[in-house]
Amino acid sequence: MPALAPIVLLLIPLISAALAARKGFAWYFWLLSGGLVGIVVLAFLKHGNHPDSDDEVNQRRRTLGNNVGLGLTAVTLLLAVFAAIG
Image (cartoon, rainbow, N blue to C red):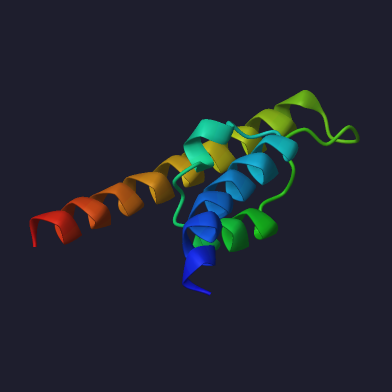
């Protein structure tokens, strides 16, 4: 089981980024979005590239999704810095 931990730790951010890109968001904002928390949040966000929605609605959804991803990434990085400095 311990040998699987590094693989899982590498896969979770990639899954978040792939799901974000699939929903029309910037994948790089979601890469470090808090692991499973980011995946759960992504599940509740509406697609930013829905073909039945007009461009203005899709743009608002993309902006919201990108801002949420960026915020989660910032919180994750801050927590990592605080954990590192003790």
